[in-house]
Amino acid sequence: MALIVQKFGGTSVGTLERIRNVAKIIQKEREQGNKVVVVVSAMAGVTDNLVNDALFLSRIKTNEELAEYDSIIAAGEQISCGLIALALINKGIKARSWLGWQVPIFTDGIFSNGKITHIETKQLMKCLEEGEIPVIAGFQGVYNDRIITLGRGGSDTTAAAIAAALKADRCDIYTDVDGVYTADPRIVPKAGKLKHVAFDEMLEMASSGAKVLHSRCVEIAMKFDLKMQVLSSFDNGVGTMIVGEDQIVEKHIVTGITCKGDIASITLKAMSDVPGSASQLFNSMEEKNINVDLIVQNIGSRGKTDLTITIAKNDLDKALDSIETNKKINCRDIIVDDNVAKISIIGIGMKSHSGVAQKMFQILADRGINILVISTSEIKISVLVHAEYKELAVRALHAGYGLDK
Image 1 (tube, rainbow, N blue to C red):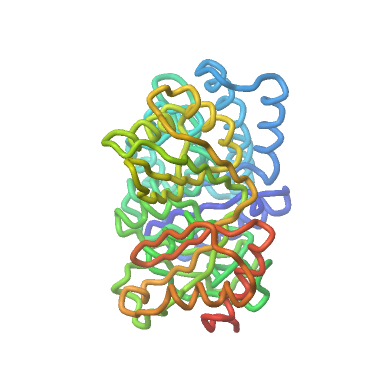
Image 2 (cartoon, rainbow, N blue to C red):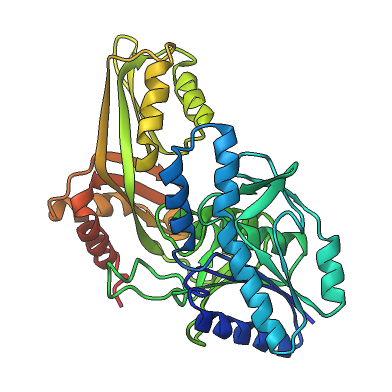
């Protein structure tokens, strides 16, 4: 008897009819003789509506306001986990809904972007031993006596953390797509579904714009060597398995192409090139809870340096405010560009092949696409381009690396 954690996203539980379908999927897994734990997101659109309601009343700036904000936006998962538990009970299956504070799922206390510190599994194990299916609200945990949300996409993180804590045999992530593709099929119709993806590759894809899995979810799976599968809740096809690199026999040079929009770049021109200059900048970002993506530094002359970072576009005002109010950050000018997109090529095969970057740059040059910033890692090359070229860039690179079906 295996222990399977099943996570269902917002579109999978978007209507009452879809919730009935989810109950059938859970029932089928149970009938195969497996123990099942379920983690659910809010019904599609519900969290967005709750966010809009909260922002209508307040700009949500203080910790006191953030605490109430989290209490509001966590409500969607409470509804969906109750509905799924009800659908299972209606099928004659013992089930019970669990909110984050009831499990409990403990967090670090950062409102709206909490990190899970510990999960108490005693009650969940008792529930399973009694033949009951726990249906857990994703996206939420608790700190002291307050609800903390885990950031958008946090239900994936909840599922992976629950699976790791329970030492589950597998974590199945059900979405509205049937697996991980070589690119977004909405941009590249010739994108193909991948049978296996390495943890490293999936982590890079998730952080670079692929919206199939949340990056924190992949980090947890990788850390605990958790077998994870991406499936569609709307068909019975084979999905994509996320595995260790050693389990992939044929390593492609480039596995996938991703793009990330809704970002902005900030360049600090002629910063003082002395120890601590960069530290002041990133201290300011941390204080405002702003995630920095790309970091590129160009060493100039006469003790000056240029530093470029990218952040989410909706964090731009906070970031500029933090820079301008920090008197220890000295630079000649601040240049902002909120019309950019990040394009990335990803593949573990890059480790053993040369010329991958040159080919990327040539493909983009042939299409007249100018590169604004370049950043690399061992298995990823990312560039910033003007936002209007992002789809052309993705399609050109997908074809250029032979990924078209």
